Image (cartoon, rainbow, N blue to C red; front, top):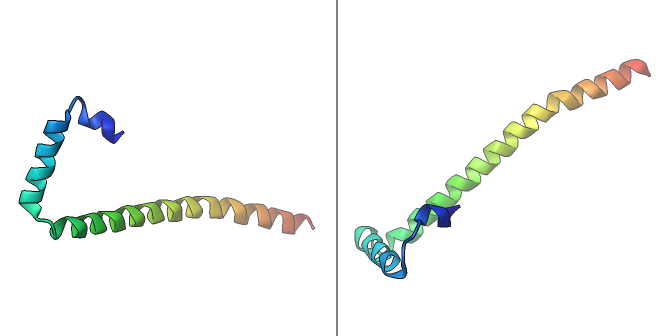
Length: 71
């Protein structure tokens, strides 16, 4: 997916982009930005898993309730 966003960028263009990013943010700031991005992605995935579990939970509880009533 990321490669499709880059289109037809060549090696020279990518080097220039990396150089500009280094100039703008500095070498020390980039790892901090990537760490924050990683935490954000992890939090997003955890939220998605929580929502999925919450959606499935009522169905499981209903199934348990029906089996208890029949016994």
